Image (cartoon, rainbow, N blue to C red; front, top):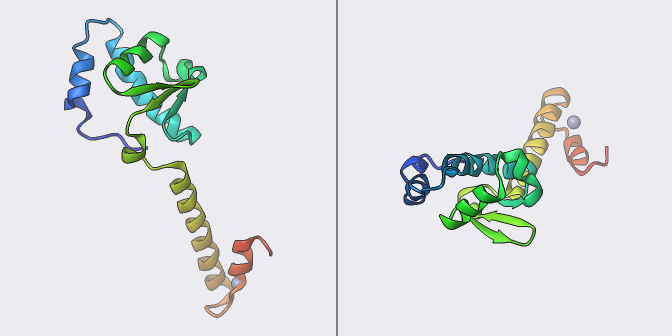
Amino acid sequence: MRLDSGIASHDKTLALLNDPSPRRWQAMASYMFGLGWSGEHGTDGFIPVTALPFIHGTKATAALLVKHGFWTSTEGGWRVRNFAIRQELAVVTAAKKEAQRIGALKANCNRWHGANCTCWQDRAKGVA
Ligand SMILES: [Zn+2]
């Protein structure tokens, strides 16, 4: 997952950290933990209510993140705003992994069977 290198000085960040709530720092941390959690679980920015304990958040910190525009409320949880713009979607990650897998099959085939062997193509399809 990616973290915006300018996050410390963003308007949203400054507004959250100036919030009178004593939970503002916990909210900020859980936002970043939430990015990691979503990336790890391939949810494309969806944070279910059940994930809150794993990102060290609470409903109160979630409300702060909604208040300051980091998350939006949705059915069963929250969604990281602009996740699709800033992060790599799970489908893209999967496509990259598949391309790497096929690239490795082809490289090993060429290395062990010679440049003219095409058995990697059947392996890539799962035939061999
Ligand atoms: Zn081969």
